[in-house]
Length: 343
Image 1 (cartoon, one colour):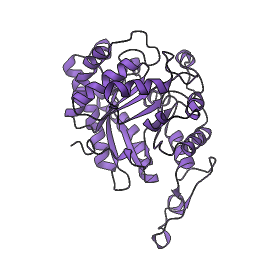
Image 2: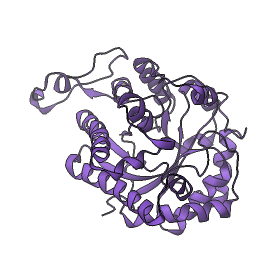
Image 3: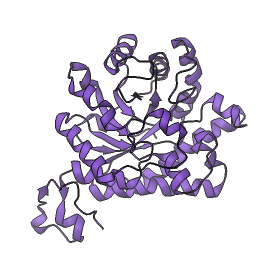
Image 4: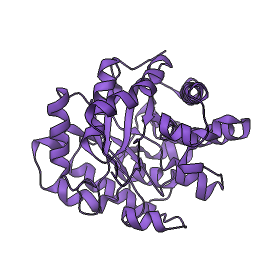
């Protein structure tokens, strides 16, 4: 069932993790073949399903360890109709892959959710075109019609919400939001920005959020930034403004490289996980309402652990030694960025 659709727990002040860079992890660290970055293609066979299951379990274990919430994002960034057709999927089989992706997350939730670790299931919607370059800009109506079917599948598969990842122009973001609204699904819009903190179209992030809100009666539950390094957008956030209250999540890249440079790279730039965690801590100190924390390209569970160590008041002796808490009273502390990982 859609457990949290009508009361998303990440809208509280509690921390919710996401995963890291699904596709870059599977390609560069696991050695898997993902045509056109289509992770959903793994669901065709048992070995691929098990690879995705292992991947999501890694982050479920991490959320349990740190006693925080978790948003599981389905492996469907490339599972819309144009990409499915390009990869040889019929509409019926593509729909089944979307349903299977959500069913996998339900099984993870059933296995790992606790009172301290609430797990939210999100149907991931990707851009119709390139994730970095808005070469063919749709109208709002075209975007709404294009994305409606996939969102309806997520609704019927009992996802809690949909999240549009790597949006690079506002018309598509508005269309997705309207499609989700018409289907009764909560929606999150995650924009990507270039090294100057602006959308690939050149539009300032603040204007993009304002335009989507104006066109949808503030339809998105919240906004996120993904697929850019924290240094690419820190200055934009530092400028201030009420629009910042609409941002709740960050899924940054490990690399400081631009999108163009990443496109040309045939090796993985993992950055520095400890520095990455420190940058998230600085963002959290400025914007405590940034409570959805995860990674994008080049990040993996090491980066998410570093975020936890840098940003969370963890239960020190309990996590490090596995011993019972003395008198059931935890001692909270803020570990430094170079503090060693819990075993």
